Every structure is written in structure tokens, then in C-alpha cells.
Amino acid sequence: MGLFDTLKKNLPGLKRKAEGLVEEHDEKIKGGLDKAAKFADEKTGGKHRDKIEKGVAKAKDTVDDLAEPEPDDQSKKST
Image (cartoon, rainbow, N blue to C red; front, side):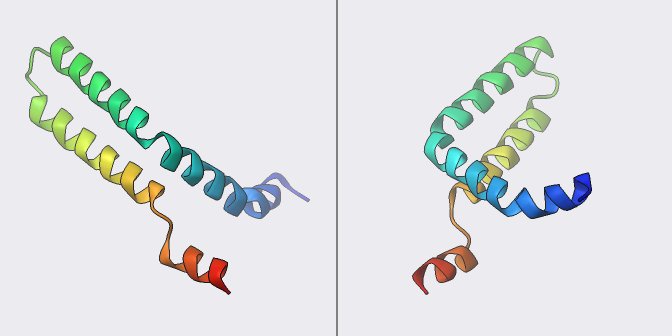
């Protein structure tokens, strides 16, 4: 079995584990994003504030998406 076959086999389990960790620690992750954004904004003198804010907003949306179970996952659990 090759490396990619092994990865394909283990990917669903790794994804579920990552989603569980994000769900458990979403507020800490978002706090870290805010700290990183503040640091970047200070280092750039506010020149790229709008881009930093957009990036952080997208990252937080991704955290929210990962923290919520997918509809397909819920239906598999109930049956």
C-alpha cells in the first residue's frame, strides 16, 4: 500500500478528529487569530488593516464551519 492509499484511507478519521478539536477549542482559535491580526496590523502600521480584517473574518468563518457537524454526518449517526 502506497503513501497516498494510506492517506486516503485515514483521511475521514483525521478530518473528524480535527473537526472535534476545532469544536472544542474554537474560542481559543479565534482569540489567537485576533492576536495575530493585531500583531500584523501593528507591524504594518495599519497599512493593510482591511486585508488583515478580511483574512481573519474568512479564517473565523472556516473555524465556524469546521466546528459544526455536516448534515450528512448527522444522518449517518442517527441510522
